[in-house]
Image: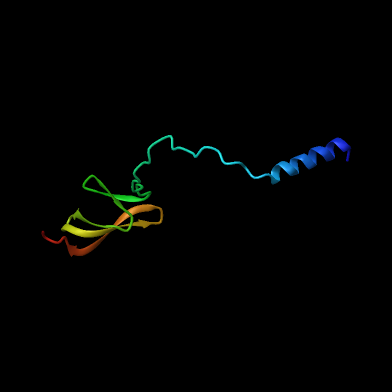
Length: 89
């Protein structure tokens, strides 16, 4: 190793050991944003609304409105319809 390479290597090692000096505190450029719930990746449709995977909804069937759970069959979203009618409110 040449003398110049040794000097450069020593100077670089010395600079890495010097702690950074405090500067002005960082300031946010934008105001903090309110977090929003992410849209579900997989969902079913009911009455024009997206229903998340695993959620239960009251859907229209040929037997009237029934409770159903949104689920996955292989790689397709599907409703698992129960025999329970929707509760009356």
